[in-house]
Amino acid sequence: MANQQFDFGLIGLGVMGRNLLLNMADHGFAVIGYNRSPQKVKELEEEMVEGTTIKGTSDLKVLVDSLKIPRRITLLVQAGKPVDDVLQELIPLLDKGDIVIDGGNSHYTDTLRRVQYMQEKGFHYMGMGVSGGEEGARRGPSIMPGGDPEAYQHVKPMLEAVSAKVNGEPCVAHLGKGAAGHYVKMVHNGIEYGIMQLISEVYDVLHRGYGLTNDELHEVFKQWNEGELQSFLVEITRDIFLKNDDKTGKRLVDVILDKAGSKGTGKWTSQDAMDLGISIPTIDIAVSMRNLSALKQERVNAAAVYPSAIKITGVSKEEIIQEAREALFFGTMISYAQGLALLFVASKEYNMDIPLPRVVKIWRGGCIIRSTLLEIFYQAYTGNPELPNILLDSHIAALLKSKTANTRKFITTAIQVGIPASALAASLGYFDAYRSAVMPTNLIQAQRDFFGAHTYQRVDEEGIFHSNWQ
Image 1 (spheres, rainbow, N blue to C red):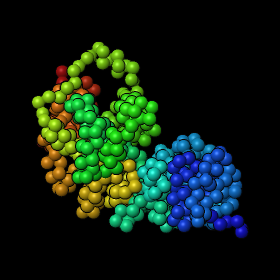
Image 2: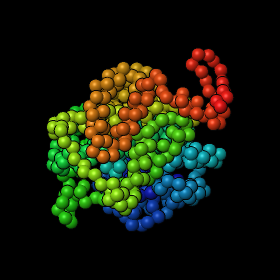
Image 3: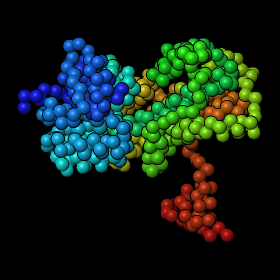
Image 4: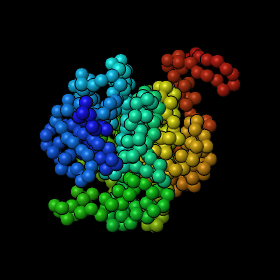
C-alpha cells in the first residue's frame, strides 16, 4: 500500500509517549502517534522539529494502515485494563507477524498473559521497561525490553538509536524471555524506592537533626555528586535545595507537604520478593514509609502525644557529614544488592534467563537509578555472571567494610534523637544478617515445633526431627 510510509507507531501521547516519539524522529525515523484526544495530537505536531517526519492522528486505523510491514507499535498507556482495552481495539486492524510492545509499567504477570494471548493470534508481543522520566524519553532513556527475540531484532536498531549512551554504548539490551523486560523494570523501581528513602533519611538527620540549611545541603550534595556517590538521584537532590517557590519566595522543598505518592511498582517488588522468599528489607521499608507518610494527621496527633526535642549535639559538622556520606553509600549499595539478588532468583524461578551483566550495564545511563556504582557492579558480574549476591564480590566487600563503622555511628545518632532512619537501619540489619554464619532462627524453629509440630533439622546429623517439648 502506498501510504505505508512510517517506521514506527506509538499509542499514548502523554508526556513520555510524546517525548519518545520526538526522540525517534530526531534519529531519522518516520513516526506516527495516536491519541484519542485531538489536543494531544496537536501538542505532538506543535513540538515537531523541522526536518523530521512525525504525524499525529486520533484514528487508530490510520496509524495501523500507515506503518511499514511488519508493523512496529509501542503502547505507552496506563497499566492494567487500559492496555487490554487498547489491544482489543488494535487486534482487528493488525496482520499476522506484526509487533506490539508495551512500554508502560505493566505488572509482569499481565505481560505474561498478553504474550500468550497475542502469540495465539499470530502476533509478536513484548514487554519493555523505559526509565529516565520525560527528559530521558526525549534525550535518551534506559530501555529494558524482554520477550520475543525475533521481534527484538526488528526494533533493535531503533531502540539503540534513541537510548542513552555510555562510552558510546547504547543503554538497551534484550533482557530475557517472557516478561523479563517488565520484571527488570519493576525491580529497578523497587531499588529506586529504596535509594530515595535512604536519601530522605540522610536529609532528615542533617536538616532537622543537625540544622543544616538548604544552602549547606546543596553544597553537601554537590560535593557528594562529584565523588563516589555520583548519581542521578544525588544530582537532582542537590538542585532541589536551591529551587525557590514562586508563591512564597521560600525554598520550594520547605513548602511541599510530607506525603509521598507511589504508582505501585515498589509494592509489586516487595510482594514478589515475599512470594519468592527473597529478603529485600530496604525496599520493603521504603514502601512502608511512603504508606506511613500518607497518615499526616495521625502523625501530627502522635507528635503531640510523644513530643521529643530532636537536636544532635556532640559531633562536628564535618563529622556528621562524613558519617552521612558513608551511610548513604552503604545503604545505596545494599538497596542495589537486594534488588539484584531478587533478579537472580526470579530469573531462574520464572525461566526468564535475565542476564545480570547486561542489566547493570544498561542501567549506567538514562535511568533514574544510574550511578557510578553500576560500573563496579558490571565489573563484578563480568567476573562472575552467576554471582547470587553482589555482597560476595571481594571488591564490593572491601568498599562496604570501609563504610560500616561510620554507618553504625550515623544510625545510632538518628535513633538516639528520635529521627526515623528505617531504611538505613534495615540496610545495616540485612548486611549483619547476611554475613552471620549463625542466626538465632534455631530458637524460632524450636518454637514452631513446640506449638505446631513443624519439625526441625539438626546441626549434627541429616534428617527431619520432631520433639515432645512438654
